[in-house]
Length: 498
Ligand code: HEM
Image 1 (spheres, rainbow, N blue to C red):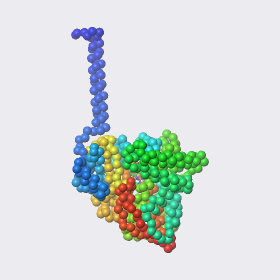
Image 2: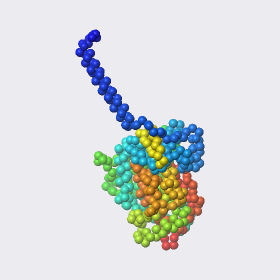
Image 3: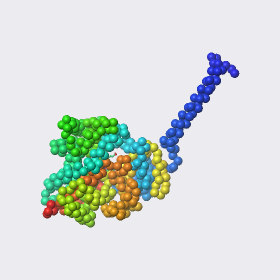
Image 4: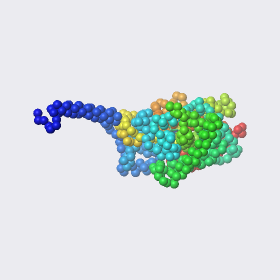
């Protein structure tokens, strides 16, 4: 063997052995990584959904702008089936139409499918200490604080303050008159939430100031420029930040005053002050403030749209109105005139009317997620599609709530479809009814929302004769929560014995 200068044959043999060992080791590591990658994100072996792009986009956009999302999805669904992708300048949105294809959307792990950075624009609105400003684990704990604050035992304590606010509000109405229902209910809901969510201090001393600032925060924070460029030096961002700073200052004083005087209230603000993370760390002032503002934001526009639509639907369907008024008479016979939590829970007919209203007029027309790991969906017809990582996926709530193989005559207002013996949403399977979404991100305020709409409508139905005087409204699609367009004029007359 030829010796290389400076090396013995032993050196060479050793080097060769070490080289071989290293080679085997590196190969093993690379193979493992490659296998790991394959497991984490399998190579696509099913076809991706059909894609709409190019010239068709102009037609889609036209339908969307003139007829709304439901009509737009319906057209594509008829041509392409229940799963299809709209590709727009490289942005791919895959629509999942029908409960059969929504399982992973609602139940997938946050690491595989989540809201991603879609709501990052809310960080300067509510602060970097909460929800989309924090990591997933902290966010989950903060969502738990919300759940605790709005769960049935706590919900029970909100019934009385809600009833009081509603009674006070309508006691100021004349014997008869004509009002804009949308405006009236929006005012009333602000009063209810200031009392039940924000607390006595705001309700009694700073209601107007807080709401003016809250509107400034949300109106400016939701401008298209602020959503796209949340940190750009624009006037809207400046106003948003100024409103946030003033609200923070006001709520800091409230939180400190409660803590220093050991005063304990029964509102949601108190519940957030008292919340603790798993490691026993209490919530900070900034967290409490961010969480209460975020909650107000989640509940305000949706509740306002839902309660107005409920009125519009009831007042436009004579038979339903009669049945629901009859239910109120029976409840009064059992509980007397003062509605408490138990009485509200017994209003099944009213509950179904609200549910049917939200099926036909969901305030949130669609929900979206970002796909972090490819997944497969199987349609009702048996086609399988691989939804690639990187796609945005959408659950078109408004379309899904009107599918004729789940809801018989979907365009007919028929609250009995949710009644015993029919229960169309249950028969249709999980995720047939998603006005409040479902699975991991199901609305936390659902029970609270039903309760406040019942308190309002139970009072109106028991005390007034009401007539919708403006035509059945169109949907205002320019708003964050889909609400009736324009004024909703209602004539009221106080009942003789009210
Ligand atoms: C009729 C009224 C309401 C409707 C239709 C509604 C609808 C929804 C929907 C569809 C979502 C899910 C969004 C998604 O999946 O991306 C949601 C989430 C949420 N809602 Fe509501 N909502 C209503 C009232 C309320 C109220 C009154 C509150 C609070 C008091 C509230 C608090 C929340 C919160 C905190 C979330 C986020 C849940 C999470 O990310 O895990 N909502 N709501």
